[in-house]
Length: 324
Image (cartoon, rainbow, N blue to C red; front, side, top):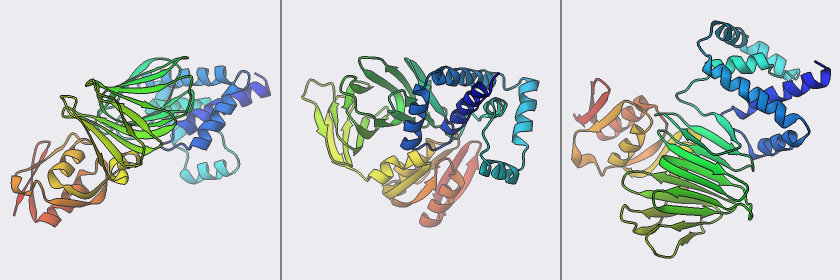
């Protein structure tokens, strides 16, 4: 293999590693798309991504496991020094990282060239980037289907929650379906949460049209913090919410501002298989303020226990809270 081919492989591996970081900036994505448009680069990236997927499937293979151990055994200081000299991950390192990539907590990146379905387990987040630069962050215990074609981009949120950052493209409308509701966007950012009780759409930037599917004209959200809530019968109500609290999950945190304790517990429970149960219903409406890491049940329980003078009891995968 010639020097140019080796460099192209290194660049593809480097991009795969960068896009699998927990946070990727818009500038990095735009740089990646420019790189991918150069002749041969798209094919190189597809090959490396295919090998990455195969490696994840072969996580139990002894050779792959050995490569993973070797790649991850480098001291942190050594890697920092190498990066300072312009270190680039080899294909072997990318495969090793893929072989050990966790399926649970954390986030990953996937580039979607066609219609596909994706889901997350409890405590997991998945970040999806469409070829046009739009991206979707799928929250814990969620499932969606993406169909991005030449004439339109359509996402069906089957359950759970997702945050959308949509690139404007008049020739390819962007629509999110959640039950009977349809959310149509141009260049904008918004959050959609589909539960058994309702579909909630929170606008953070731009504007979106929300059609409740009840035979009434769509509602336009055009100010950050506007929230459309659609009940099971199709009734739509518009309110204003705290954007930071509504979207804090995208940064791995839960932010509560005067949130009823019952609601805060329900939100914390979404990120863990351990369930918190409040045994004293009279405290359900007590207000909670604070910021917690998603999945950090111990810190959350300790905080609310101290705040409301609660006693904790543990039963299997349940944490029972009652008054002292």
